[in-house]
Amino acid sequence: MPKKVIVTGGGWAGCAAALSAARAGVEVQLLEKTDMLLGAGLVGGIMRNNGRHTAAEEALRLGGGGELFALTDQAARHENISFPGHDHANLYDITLIEPLVLRHLHDAGVDVHLERRVVDVELDTDRISALIDEDGHTHRADAFVDATGTSGPMGNCTRYGNGCVMCIQRCPAFGPRVSLAARAGVRELMAIKRPDVPGAMSGSGKLNKESLSQDIRDALDETGVAVLPLPQDLIQQGKLGTKACQQYALPDYADNVVLLDTGHAKLMTPYFPLQELRRIPGLERARFEDPYAGGRGNSIRFTAVAPRDNSLLVDGLSNLFCAGEKAGIYIGHTEAMVTGMLAGHNAARQTLDLELLELPRSLAIGDFIASGREEILTRQGLEKSYTFAGSVFFERMQKRGLYTTDSDVVDRRVEETGLVRGVFSKPL
Image (cartoon, rainbow, N blue to C red):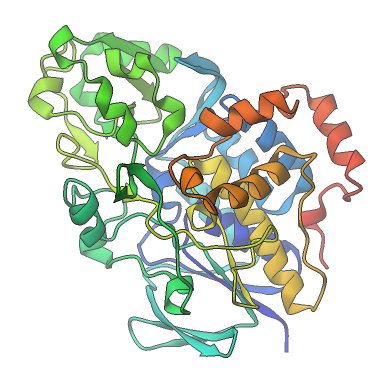
C-alpha cells in the first residue's frame, strides 16, 4: 500500500504542506471545511515586502510548497511597490489566486476535498490513526498535518473580541474550526496581545473598490497604494496595539487610512466604524467586503498554537505535524507557506521512516522556524508576533545579516547549507 498523508486545513499553509508531501512521492489528501481554498489568503494579497522577499527566494529554491510563490507572482496586480514601512512588495489579485492554486494542487496529484470538516481524531497511544469528519466518514493515513489555523470560532471572537463580524472564515455557514492537536489531547498555547486577554485581532479589512471615489480607484489602479489623512478627531493610536499584524502597527497607520489594491481595497486597520470612515473625502459611499461588519471588529486569532519541535512535529505525538499559525504566532501568507512546505515534507518523510529535516538557521526560513519555537515557550514571547515583514523578526533578520534582495546571495546561502536545490520537489 502507498504511504499516505492527510492535511487538514486548506489555507496557504495547508496547500504548501499538501504540495510538498505530494512532491515527495506519497499519496496526499487535503481536507478543507469551506468551499474554497486559501482561507485568509482570499482577503490577503501582500507578498515580498521587506524580509518576505528573502524568504520567498529561499522557498523557490527549496521547491515543493515553495512553488506557490511563483503563483502569487503570476497573479500580481502590482509589483515592487512601497507603502508606509514596507518596500519592494507585490500585491496579488485575491479574485484570481484561488483557482490557480486549486489547479496546481490537482496537477500535482493532491486529492482535494472541499466542504469536508474534520471534527475528531482516532488515537492509538501517541499516533493518530484516522480523522472523523462531521458526516461520520473516517479518513485514514500514516501521517497528518494540522493546518487548521487559529482564527475563530465564533465563540472566541465573542469572548476575546467584538463578536462575530462575518469574516472570510464564514464559521456560521461552514462550522467552527476544530484543531487536530487539541482533539489529540495537546495543550495548545495562546497569544496575549492585551493585558491578560488571549488572542489578537486580524489587522486589516477589505472595502469594495466600486464604493470608493474615482480618484481613489484611479490611484489604486495606477500605483497600488492610496494614503488618506485622517481628521484629527479620528486618529486612535491605541488601536494599533490590538493588531495581530504588528508589522503595520506604525504611526502612519493610525494617522492615515492606508489602502492597498488587491482586487478589493485592502484597509490596513483592524476595523473602522463605517460612519466615521465615510467622513473621509472619497470614502463617502464606502462598503466593507470583509469582514462584513468591519466597522465593528475583526476576527480573533492565535488562541490555538501547538507546541512543536523544529521539524514541526507536534509535541507528544509521533505522526502529527503543524503549519501556519498553528506552528507559532506567525503573521502572513509567506510565513504560512514556508512552515507548510517543511511540515508536508516531514510528514512524507515520517511515513517512510526517514530522519526528519530541520532547516539550518543560516537560512531566514530556518531561523524563523527555530526562533519562533523558542519565543512561544516564554510569556514575553507570547506577547509578540513574528513575521518576515517587520516587527521583532525582521529586526532580527537585519541584525543577523539574513535580509537580502540579492538573488546571488540567496543562491550561495542555499548552496552552502548542503541541501539539494529543489529538495522539497524531489521524490524521497
